[in-house]
Length: 627
Image (cartoon, rainbow, N blue to C red; front, side, top):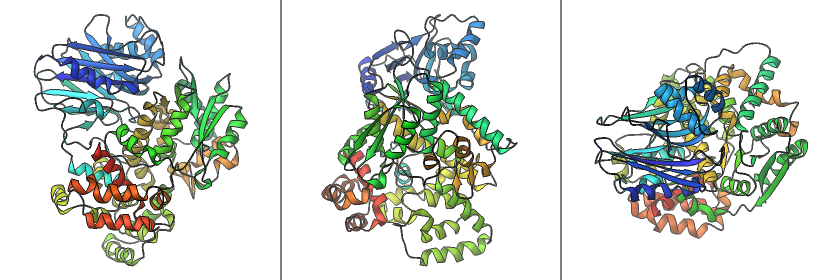
């Protein structure tokens, strides 16, 4: 895995400041500690940091084509590179290395912008074609690898794997985007294509961006989307068998590596399925690692041990004390912008453990979004059935009133929060799903924000993120709609961002076979009832895995990768929270209603869980502001 950066003069061929380019590149040293390289020519600078995975002695970047007309910087792994190489050789291309980087460069020369449609894997890359005077950027279909960019005021264009690289350039915008603040406090992350800075963007998953020298327009173009068109049919056992075969093929191609390889093993269904499949494909014991918590309410290590013993893996478990909040300030530096998924803390520790033993680790991320594993899909599906029983003209006022009158009980499990459920049912389907997903409700955000921030927002609400995607979302099926929205927002913005930054902080490459795009495309064609049946999420996946995994792993209640925030706020973090949120950068920012902020802090420190999520979001926002 690697880090890439670049500076491109869109208007001419002005000299590139090599020192600035070098600082941009070195800010991502952790992404590629093995090697670094720069390419500078009039009007263009490219940089690369390398973590060597395949063909360790070759594949240095920036990589130049044999004819000297194209230069590539690339972050990722293309798993079908050997097949593409055969195809490109038949077209006359000659290769000097055995790495996938050279194949990506040749694919650009052979197929131009359409090359991305041939690539199977995770990637973010930029290629400069001197003949066409074109800079081409691309990001993989699901957003496994990140890519940031900023067209700046003097006509230059900046890009990099992390936001911190762009911030090394003196022209990088640094004004906070007020709508991104609204998005963050709704979602706990900032969804693509925005960043916290106005004028700095993330290239969305499944998009490319083409810049031609002399032209200032640079609109991203979508080259891929997942289609929830039900096509698969046949007996359930036949579909289950095909699912296992497709899983085996996806895991197999993700195991190609010239360095030590292993897997995360949480004890959940997805990581256990990946490990079981790896064990069946490997002649050696699979290296697996997991972390355990002292608090049994958050501990899944016993289930990980079941799978490890069944498949004879070389398993390592490390006890992580739940009081791992010393990482809070460190996280702000990793993510470069506000990010408030508290599971980033144990994820960081897991990657730290894994890197001691392997350089590449496979994970089970993506299974919940693909196969309807989150309980919220069941709740949303049930709520949508209730919506259809009453016309909106009656449902909105009547159910909305009941929701307003119902007492708040955020300490209850989601399915038992009657107030939130009624408020969701009163809304239309997409509004209802947004309401159930929002970490901080519309009402809480309205009270948190200062009058000046609300004026700046000019009525903007984070629901617009979902509404934008609804133009391409599945229609008529609430479950598929929710899965699609998660694949476009929560998966890349929260889950994959979390894993990329936590793993790259330790120079660890993490691969996600359940997000192989061919597997994702096929699963999307399965009937919704095979993914979620009654109360059982991932129904067909679990049925298919019954010969391979213990029943206790497959059918126990889902448990998240959580940390005990409420206990922290009442105990070891009590003074830090109060000092940070009442007297620190939050108070100085002018973005918040400080009277309500003090109320939330008081409530959280008196054992009432109403504001645990908002307080954690504020704490992480404060860490970002403090820089």
